[in-house]
Image 1 (cartoon, rainbow, N blue to C red):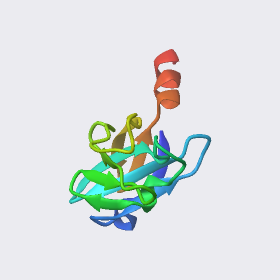
Image 2: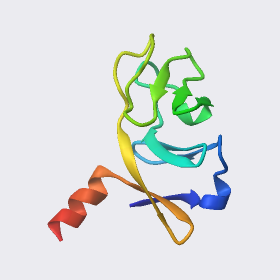
Image 3: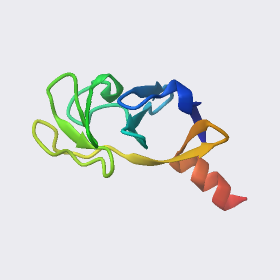
Image 4: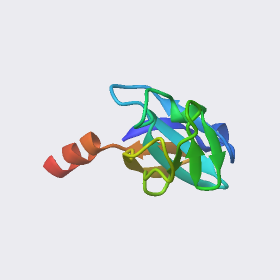
Length: 108
């Protein structure tokens, strides 16, 4: 699992970017936490810098909307979904479960 931040550091309506080989954006949508790939599937733009609208984030570059629950785009210009990730809160810290971490746990 990757550490994102503490719950206190991510108030409702805000997001945080976890840097890495594949950057991940974590959002607090009215108290619900979601994690998706940070890079828009249409063009290289950071979704963590976009605008949160309920369970959707609007890309800051061309206004494509992505559903935080599924990663699916709901309007053009984006046609491809972004990956979603499970979010875990443990003792006030937000973690994102990545595929690589899940594979390592399964192998143990």
